[in-house]
Image 1 (cartoon, rainbow, N blue to C red):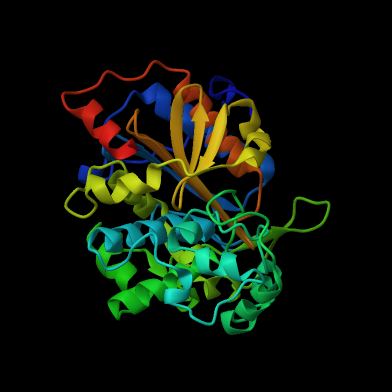
Image 2 (image 1 turned 90 degrees about the vertical axis):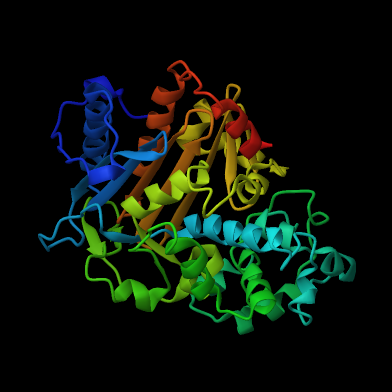
Length: 395
């Protein structure tokens, strides 16, 4: 874990308040995190990054560091668009929940209702596989099945027949097995139940009403964005970062990894997840995502998190980490040249977004240090009705 905030003394970036989005906070807290963020990126040599802190339904602080592309002076700004990778799963889960509350889908719907030709080796497991197992990462199929084919830019129509040779490790719904290809099958279910393209629905039902003006889906939309970050990888045994092309790969599975967004827009997403936008996302459509479904024991040994966690689960499109007696809802993302992290506490009405354009463990160092400091503080006093709202969302 990185050195405590108070020892960070390098390079404070002063970010102006952003109109009505920003809320005043104690300067010492904000300066401490700003120093930590920038010093960690400098220590790891990350080309560029951005963060946003959300508190009490408002964006509290935004900070940026570095450049969009090595060798080009254009800086990362609060509006710079990054690939969010698996953070995209939180959007797919929320869109599915919206459609469930409208009786256009059911969590218990069989996958074969929408993909009748889909097969696992075990016919019983095939018939038992439901939408909630896709979104809840409990299909029972070996983790990251056929991600190697995604990395090779193979289309889904060539990947899906491969699953007929796989015998599940457990019955659907009973164990955690992380997926990208299988998770993405919620997309065809959404399209068939609505008659609309998945990407179009995301924009109409989530991005536009939440004011996420720089959030898009897909490679073409990403490349069309002038203010976008370039992906970088580190050359072997060195601190030299090399820009790399943006390939189709995980854009081939939009529900799993297709969303592009700025740090400001992901801050708006966290505000909605914490119940502050009931006009778009009522508590009843958020609540199912926060229910602990399957334990994720491997996460208890995850890097910098291992010293904090007392338990770990997966809900629907969100990880749920328990620290002491408090739950954090979070998801990380990684695709070649980008890493992303989004996390929040319903109890504390606080959240953090971090986006980097270089693959680095700096991401987890920043996030875990933030929550170690945050959770060490007493919980804020509840406003009238706030406790009932938090309980309602987490039930």
